[in-house]
Image (tube, rainbow, N blue to C red; front, side):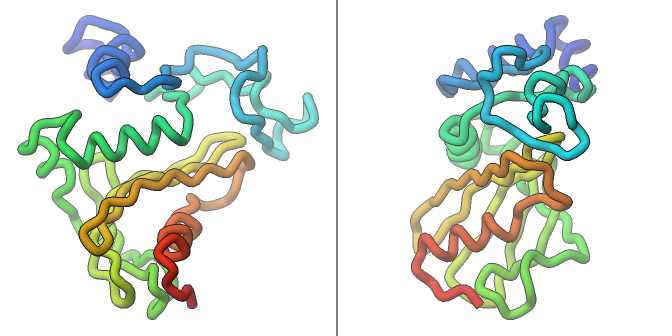
Length: 195
């Protein structure tokens, strides 16, 4: 994707993301990472594989190791991005509907019968979860992932006609994306009982 963006735009990936996403929706503390965090300005992050510097990955993890590029942001900006995306303020309505068109997977989020249990589907660059068995959650859209020292899950869910946008970050490498904590947090915010 990075190479396609750079080829089509004749610009750097960082400039494309800044000009097409960051600046138009006024993300205040978001940028494309381009090197080591030698000043340790980022959230401290730990991974057992990074034994130097007390397992803190910041002075050792170079963001250019990821070929697709790493966007550095705050939880507030990540939530703003997802809210603006879902409200068609980044993409046209047609592009957004194509992005959110869900292709079912054989996977479910959460134990069957739990309030946060739902069918997991893939959109274009986004996860879609619907067909909730219990609770009042409508479809949620989000994305999660990890890199050394960080795991994140963020997205939007509509509940009782209200949109909730949430970002969960764990500053330690974990074995799976934190989708279950994300759904549990939504349920707790709504005051529903979690099984």
